[in-house]
Image (cartoon, rainbow, N blue to C red; front, side):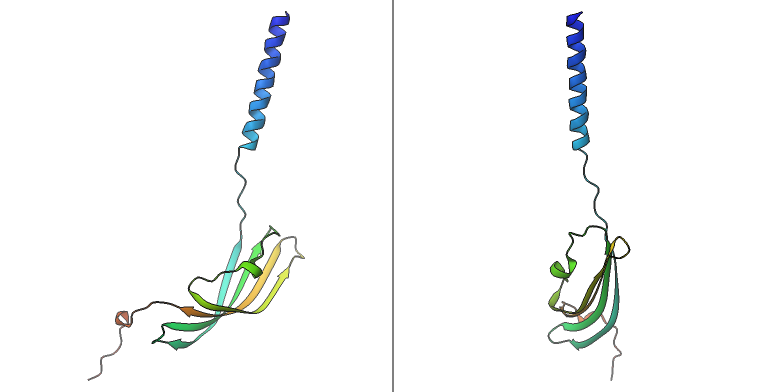
Amino acid sequence: MKFSYFHICIITFVCFFLSVQQAEAQPPVPDTVKTGIYVTSIHDIDFKQKEYTINLWLWMRYMNRDFEFDKYLEVPNAKSVTKLYSTIDSSSGDYFMQMKLQCIMKDDWSLLCLSLPHLP
């Protein structure tokens, strides 16, 4: 009887150990950030330097308070980014960040793709 009781204890311990390992191995649920952008103006277009200035509003809604978008925001192809306004609201249980940005964008475009009227 001791022999079968010992086996039952070992099997129970192994099953418990495997269930704990399996619970820890599940990947964490990824964080979700909902974002939007509203372009207010595109100006100072310089065809020679292939750059332009854009003013825009950027907003984000997220749950993880460790996100610091106002400090670590990167705009691809931007030569410079100026933050004109920034605010974070957490009164509704989640975080809502709003920023107004002015970016000088550097891009590589070809004017040959444009259908310009041909003048005589």
